[in-house]
Length: 140
Ligand SMILES: Cc1cc2nc3c(=O)[nH]c(=O)nc-3n(C[C@H](O)[C@H](O)[C@H](O)COP(=O)(O)O)c2cc1C
Image (cartoon, rainbow, N blue to C red; front, side):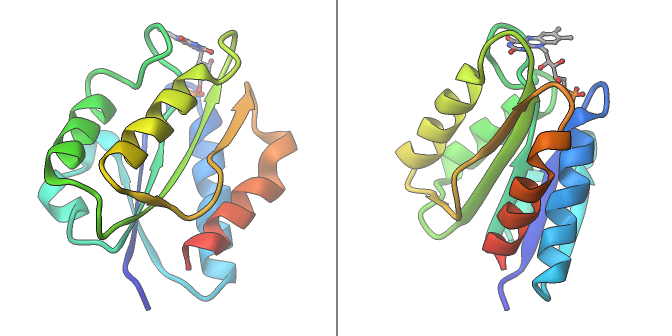
């Protein structure tokens, strides 16, 4: 079974709640996942996994969190994602999820394979609980 890691960042809890549901999906499908807050994630360690699940809300102006997630993403881009399966999720507010389109393109540009469509939601994740669980299951 492939090794799965999830790294997420959440300022007000929405993306964190999504991460809980993604984890639930992974575990329901019989998988195991190691979960790290982005502030605790070491890129070398993250790169050891076959499947990398990343969660981040829209920050800045349609950007990833600049302190932790953006540096992690840049490091992964430098390494390349050719051998990796990737899942993306996150919450946004006023931007319609534009940041996720950019994030997805960055993954695809370095040959990462998305396990499923990214899951995004405006604000709280109640309406995408099932999608988050399905995303988790697609990782296994
Ligand atoms: C400093 C800051 C910048 C933000 N920038 C954006 C943005 O560019 N586009 C957007 O749709 N939402 C933006 N948001 C809204 C958050 O993405 C939204 O509130 C999200 O639900 C937060 O998720 P979290 O609870 O996981 O932190 C921003 C919020 C903050 C505090």
